[in-house]
Amino acid sequence: MTKKAVILLSGGLDSSTVLAIARDQGYECYTVSFDYGQRHRVELEASVRVSKELGAKAHKTLKLDLRDLGGSALTDDDIDVPEDLGEGIPVTYVPARNTVFLSLALGWAEILGARDIFIGANDVDYSGYPDCRPEYLEAFEKMANLATKAGVEGDHFHIRAPLLELTKAEIIKEGSRLGVDYGITVSCYQADEQGRACGVCDSCRYRKKGFEEAGVSDPTPYYKES
Image (cartoon, rainbow, N blue to C red; front, side, top):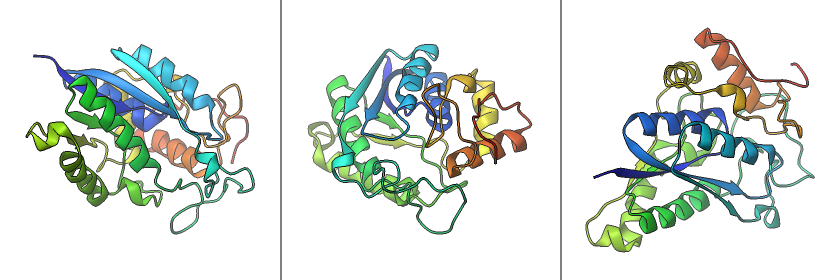
C-alpha cells in the first residue's frame, strides 16, 4: 500500500530537500505552501516549480493573511528585514506561523489518509525560531494525535523533520545527492520579482555559507552582495 505524506513546501532550500528525502523514502508526496502575505511572495512560484520538478502527486497553495496580525519583518512593511546577524529571536520570526501551517497540513493529511507530515525545521544552523525546536515538534505531534479522529482511533500521525540535526552544508550535500536543483529554489526574505536574492539577510547568509562549506557551487542569483 502506497505511503502518503504531506510536505510543507516553502520553495526554499530546506523544504525542497525535505521533499526529495520523502520521495526517496518511498512516499507519495502531497505538497502544501502558504500565501500568508509574506514579503518574499516569489517563493510561492518556486514552490510550484519544485513540487513539479520533484514529482509531487499534488500541490496546494493555501491563502491566509498574517499581515492582519503583523509583528514580523516578513508580514509588516514597517519592520525592516535585518541585514546583519543578531542574537536572540530575530524580527523575521512570524508569531505562531509553524503552528498554523502544521495545523492546516494536519487537516489535509487526515483527509488524504496520510499519516506523515514533513517539515524542514532545523536545530543546528538555528536562526532563533522557537517553532523549529525538537521539543516543539514533539509537542505538536502529541497534540495532533489528541485532536484528530484518526489519532483518537489509533491511526497515529508523525511529524517528520529529517533536517533537524543537519548543518546547512550537510543538507545541501544530501539534496544534491538526491537531485535537487537548488537554482529553482528561493530562500531570500527580500527576493526581487525575478527571484534574485539579496545576499545579506540571515536566510541568504546561512544559505551562502552552506554552499561554501559543502563545496558545492552556489546557483543562487543575487542582486546585491554582502
